[in-house]
Every structure is written in structure tokens, then in C-alpha cells.
Image (cartoon, rainbow, N blue to C red; front, side, top):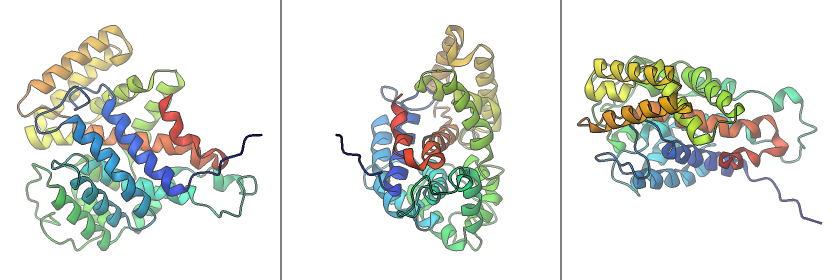
Length: 319
């Protein structure tokens, strides 16, 4: 008789989901993004792989603590392995999501799944996330600002209020609200991750329910996001006009079926070539960060809804 394995600790599952989300996002054929065999200037796929692996220990050790500390430790871990800014946006997005997921997965070990009331078992991730965001304070902001300065993202410029080069005097949520008009990550904080939960995650669920292979489903979700809103990394590096033009191109690819049809795939490949040829590349990196957030939420959902089957949350990523 086979011995039943005990469930993995909640911290290990959350860390594995964070790593898997990064790797799945990286390997999908998304237009304009780096992926294995398709490096970008100053952004090699191997560095993104190393970054995905690097954040695992930080998420295991710190997801139960302050969100700001998790952000800082995630960036510190990454910088020990790579020199470029490879994953700041992803860490900023995954940190509060991980804290919310851990709050749902970590339960009294003496209580079985059957004895846990059904409404508590099935409570959604987003309401817990909103609670995490509301509790963010100035200490979270200070550690997040330290992480941003350590990562050294390009093209941030200067702003008159709560600039990242200074010491913040407001909560992290308030600081993100001030930046929401110019940055996709800040907009997610300000809106309770609206794009992640109302655009990206429903799209990915529909595609997977239709048995679209996961890499293609991820790429299609990326196109949907890119067509829905201009990429703020492109806007920062190339201007809003360029970002809007890329969004219109993504819309044309989607109208041809996206990566789900032969014609759509040809148009997607042409868009990929055009984005890569630009100098610097028209890299929709903010959209890729949102895809990673969506993948993390998708991976942890089964464990949050069915605690007795929590070990399947990350395993299904390979299907």
C-alpha cells in the first residue's frame, strides 16, 4: 500500500508558484519579449531563468512577513545572480499576491480540509489581496524604494512627489497610487490588481478551458493585455505614441485570431520581428510582468479552493 505523502508547506508552494510563473511567462512566444533563443540587447534569457530560480528562497522565507521586505529580499537575491534589472516589476507584483496566497494556504495543521467551513475554503484570492494592500505602510514603502534603487530600472525620471530617489513618507499603497497613471505595476496596486483579475486571468482560464496548449494560451493572453492597454515600459523608453502604436498592432493580430490561427501567428511573428528590430527594442516588459502575475494567481487557485489537493496547484503547470 502506497504511503500518502504529507502536503507541502504553504511557503514552499507559494515560492514554487512564483518561480513557475516566471519561467512559464519567459518561455511563451510573446511578441517583443526575451525568451530562450531570442535574447534582447542587455537582456539575456539565461539571466531571466537565473532570476526566476533566485527568488524562490526569498519567497519561502519572507512571504509571511512584510511585503516591502519580501520585495527587497527578492531583488537582493536576484542581484546576487545577475547584473541587469530582470524582474523588479514581477517581484513588485508577486510580493502582495504571495502574501495573500499564503494567508489562504496556511491553515491550522490540526484541522482537516473537511472540517474547514466551505466559505472559508473557497474564499477568493483577490479579497485577501485587497486586505494585504490596505495594510501596507510607510515601512513597506521604504523597503520597496530601496529595492527599486538596487534594481536600477532605466528611464524612471524624476517626479515631484515621493520620488524613488528620496525616502518615502507615505504608505506603499499611497505611493503606488501617485504613480498609477504612468506605471502598470503601480496601477495594479492602486486598483486591487484590476487588470490581472478582470482581463488577464479570465482570458487565460477561457483559453485553458478550450484546451489551448499552455504556451500558446500565455502568448494569446499577452496579446489581449497588450491590445487592451499601452505598455508603460515602451511608453517610458519610446514615448506614448510608440506604445499606442504597438497596442494597435497587437489588436490587429488578435482580430486575425492571434496565435490561435495560422494567419494570426504570421502577424504575431511579424510584430515580434518589428519590435526586436527597434533600437532600443520595443520590449513590452510591463505587459510581461502582468502575465507573470496572472500566471501566479492561476497556479495558486486550486490550492486555495481545495486545501486537500493543494499540491496540484503548481504541478498542473506542466499540462
